[in-house]
Image 1: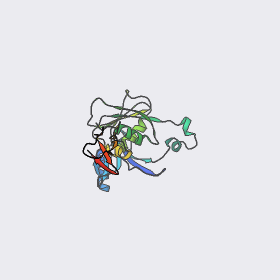
Image 2 (image 1 turned 45 degrees about the vertical axis):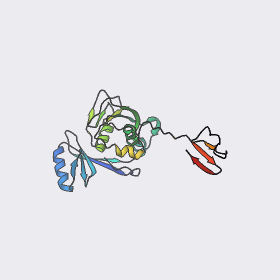
Image 3 (image 1 turned 180 degrees about the vertical axis):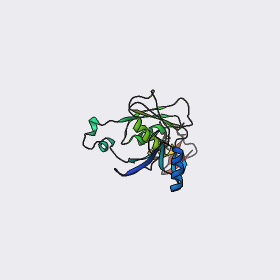
Image 4 (image 1 turned 120 degrees about the horizontal axis):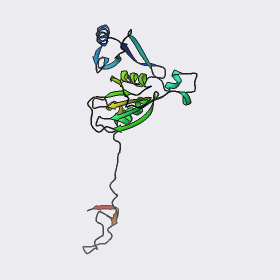
Length: 224
């Protein structure tokens, strides 16, 4: 997971793709003093780099660059609006925290995905995961590196779509609190203002007002 807030064009995340994950973990842990936590390298409790299995081939570091427009960054000579290839991000909320799916979609999709669908799972899931349809492997792997989640291909996911399932292990507060999502539906109510009834009669035989909620005698309120 990268720290957000990098300027456009600034390197914001790195991950090593290797055919031997265990050896890479041991090597970089010894070299930099990194720990391996939740599928990522960490230093003093903060994520610093990702690691993923690339199958066969030499190890290589992958660099991610922050951008406000992924299409323009990839093809600066082209008009990104009509022609850029964009992958949709769908999110399923299986965390039990209301509003987290919409908040995560809004944050994670910025500059690299189109905002897809959001729905609530029928049951909770202890583990978050990422699946992708045809044409979305690269986008899914980059997201997986950032979040430290396993990425799998799925025929059940639509073409050019990444599906993020938010489980109970997801860092929901990083998204919900940041964007101000507290619930999907918030209602407020105010108590009705009481009606002041003048108490103008004098003496013990004064008529009783019809509403005794609040009375006033001159400028002095009389509360029942």
